Length: 81
Image (cartoon, rainbow, N blue to C red; front, side):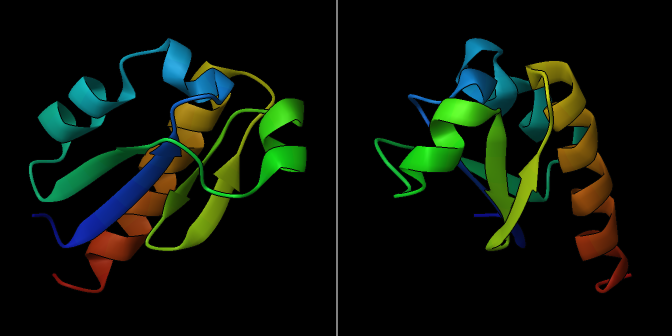
C-alpha cells in the first residue's frame, strides 16, 4: 500500500481513463483505489474528480483532473521527502 492514497469512484468520468495504471506507474509510492461509490453524487455527475489522501481534486475533463491529481500527489509526497 502506498503512502498516498487516491480514491476514485468507478462511476465518475475520471474512470474513463486508466488512472490506476497511469498513476501507479508514475508514482510507485501511491495506491489508487477504485471504489463503487464515494458518496459525492452531485459532484460525480458534474465533473471528473478523485480524493488524494482525503482531499477532493477535480477538473473539467479527465485529463485536466489527472494533471491536478499529479500536482496533489507531488504536494503530499513532499511531506515525506
